[in-house]
Length: 103
Ligand code: HEC
View (spheres, rainbow, N blue to C red):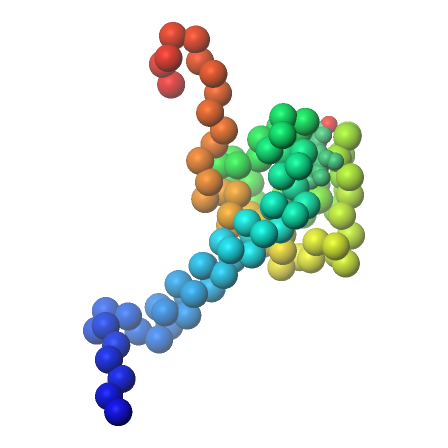
């Protein structure tokens, strides 16, 4: 049987694309399960599209500043946080209401 494979995709490129896709999917799940009920509800500042490094997010997630709860590794793993960073930074920033409609 013949395997057809697009000439432009090397196995390494496919692996990279699959990893990126997995991180996006995983990040969305972690966000929905642990973060969205505060950060998507107006209770906490929006954290989408802000180009936050995974290390910065990790520091906040482990410490739980202000009104935020802290999450131990058993609840949100380091891999989850890396996936979260990929997911969050790929989303558009929250729309700010700008009087006059200029953005
Ligand atoms: C119980 C509600 C709650 C949950 C759940 C929560 N957060 Fe937060 N988060 C907050 C609040 C409130 C702040 C603002 C803290 C402060 O500075 O006083 C915050 C701040 C942050 C900040 C800093 C935002 C900034 O503007 O500097 C990041 C990043 C963050 N949270 C990420 C997360 C992630 C990732 C998760 C999920 C793993 C999460 N949070 C879950 C309430 C929550």
